[in-house]
Amino acid sequence: MTYLIDTDDFTSRVDISSNRLLTKINAQIAPAQVKYLKNILCTELYEDLVTQYADGEAYMDERLQALYPFVVDFLVFKTYARYLVGANVIDTPSGSRVKADSGVDRAATAQERKDIRAQADDDANFYQDELVAYLKRNQDTFTEWRDSQCGCDARFVNKMNNITVIGKQSKEVISKNRIDYT
Image (cartoon, rainbow, N blue to C red; front, side):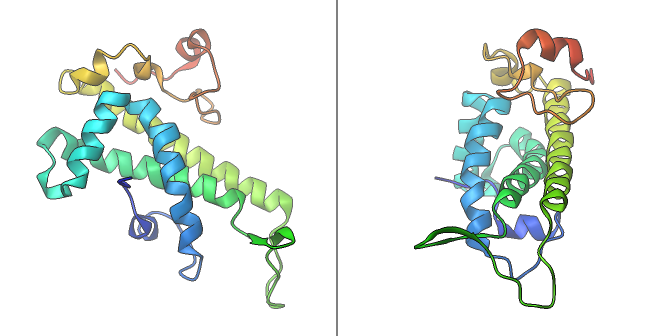
């Protein structure tokens, strides 16, 4: 699978410790990319982006190069939100365990982890709106997106910016609550 982001993209956008297990972050990139980004871009545009990116960012056509920064912002924060769920959990032969403290710091409480996750989700939702707004403004350039029958033009986030639309709400609720940037 071709990943559209890597761990270097995180260092410029997310405040994350350099000693974090990068394998845990990398493990969340594919699900975020396939489960969420593909639903926003729709299959044809998503596959075009992945194919051209695999050939090298410099070889992407002009329209996809312009779209790519919006994709990176969204994917970083969606991946980060997924990563936070199990950030301090390690898998052991005895099952999942919370990572032990070094004695210097205390582990984040459940409420603190919930708040951090909520903030990451909020950031991901913001960038989802930015990505969809960009596609809507440039829908004549992204005709495969515009003409898709999957409803991806309605992939805005709830006005309160706290519920991602993908897999969460019906089209009636989406159209009633969405933020329209056109």
